[in-house]
Length: 598
Image (tube, rainbow, N blue to C red; front, side, top):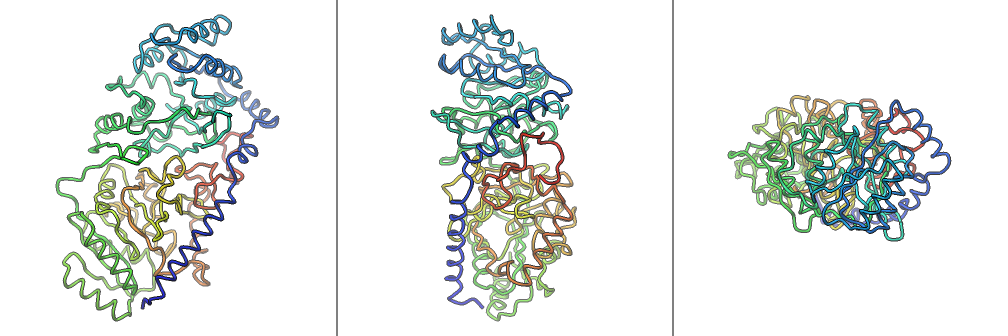
């Protein structure tokens, strides 16, 4: 039975967790130190890169396309110097001169073309999107990249991009990580990107720079039907990746480009580009700018008659939490058609039993299913879902509390999209810090929650704590999935994972059959985590946890350490997207070579 002491204990636990989190943050490797240790081109690294150049099976020419629309003369000189320092020498720079180009800049490039055959002025081009189309039409190389003077391409950039294109002959796009430099050339704000993630691309242009495109693919695209303005690069990424398989889009996990701090995206400018993309691919979504949100939000429409959802809530006693959970769903949720199944796993508290009888009697949307087996989270859910009424099922912990009334509309709208498996929510601790921003595999040898302990004012790596995205897994503390998809993969594995990792394994099996799992920041709930079940670090429970983690490692092997929604330059030691020290990739060898130790 709950006591007056329990809320005080929970506050103490949360306070201590937050204190430990801040202490850990203070000990993290800084980006300046990380660059010095792992991303400086010393003699050994340069020698290794030269060997990689010598071993390339071919050396295609790469065309860099640049309209002369911005930048001072000094910036253009610096840009050309960076190109001439490239380890990969097989490039051409094609410049186009719009009517508003600076005369001194245009003269500079004409002079350079006379002494360096790789500088190739195209001549007069229109401004804006038409100018870029003219440059593309003039390209004579198999691969092209649009660029400008706000980008400083590092010495090994073209080498690693060409190497990746050759390694993946069916690819149409190769992109890489980047960072920013300030006026003093200090590197900061690393953009450690994930592998191909079409749902994240709806929110913002995470592909960014540098990006190398197969020229015949770009020429085959439908011509832009809108003037994308400052969002033209996002528009290109959306158009260029529509209908492409995962293997056709390649991510190089190295920082290959420094962006000027003057380079700033205007997220709201992307709304027309995202809406046009949704219309082209036939998705019934509405793109909008969100005040105070650095990106685009898409509302995915529900059918005229929203599908029925069965919410499954396992519990054993825990009246205060259970009542708070169920009341918050009934009183705050705006979704029109759902039922709640409380799975009573051997409750013996008279007050809790009486309340469950009472709520089932007075509320037609609630029923209680008694299941007295020893606690097995996977089995409890499997049995209830086998009998569920809903076309969709929502797995909900008894320590969840609704925040956003439209949480279920958001999650069902996403789960109903083609090819989607499980959908997870943004869950907050009682103290207002982030508990669940999705699941990253490999953390701690099993899996961990993304961006744990961030506050609402902290956007996370590349804003990912605030963006819709595809992830390998989401937590079953609040998860929505089609019932047919749940049954298709056999539900959760109750034998191997009775308590821990059952949701992660379930999501990985959904991915294995071709479904993608999504996390949304726009379905928000509190998760008063593990209050009723207790810690996995207690004797007995710790041994069980270690068995289940070993079972995860045995089933999924080294793939856990290579989560496509993460980056090998980020740590597997904690859940805060800190820098890996050391990273799991190195410039001393190609990142795509198999290595069980990375």
